[in-house]
Length: 183
Image (cartoon, rainbow, N blue to C red; front, side, top):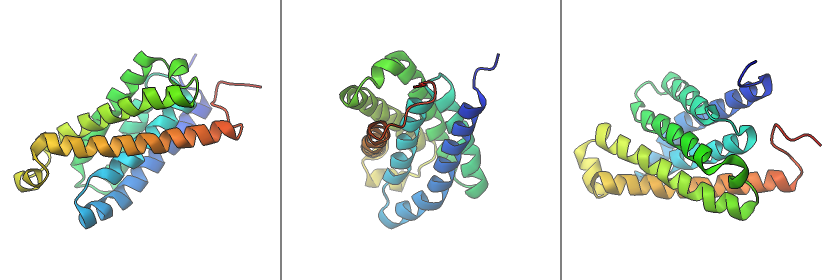
């Protein structure tokens, strides 16, 4: 018996492609314009919330993060900073499993209370990794060092979390159900 069925694999592929392509095309443009790492977090954590809500299995978010990393490297070979988001996807996956998928998405309030801190935590992890290993000192100094950089990512994670929660609430309101619910 397989762990992920064909629909779940298709959803993982779609979410990975969406994150990888949007991030590799638009995030560098916004970063060059404003010097802020917020769009990459907004895209990533909105998609990770959709992934958790839709599939609800340990490993799905990690798979999305790994595949999105490969896609990002195809389009942006110099974008090694994305490895911070790969690690953040693993943190997101484990944390949402510990919270419990049904508990985390019981209603809009529980989704907000559970997913916003997870998004912020995971984005902070990404910011810490990126700031520690991939950023040059002058750019870090501009934003208050590694902790300031991690804080900027946390803000992006919160914004992405709000977008993801809004998308999940909108889909649920319109009668779109996650994969394993049959009515």
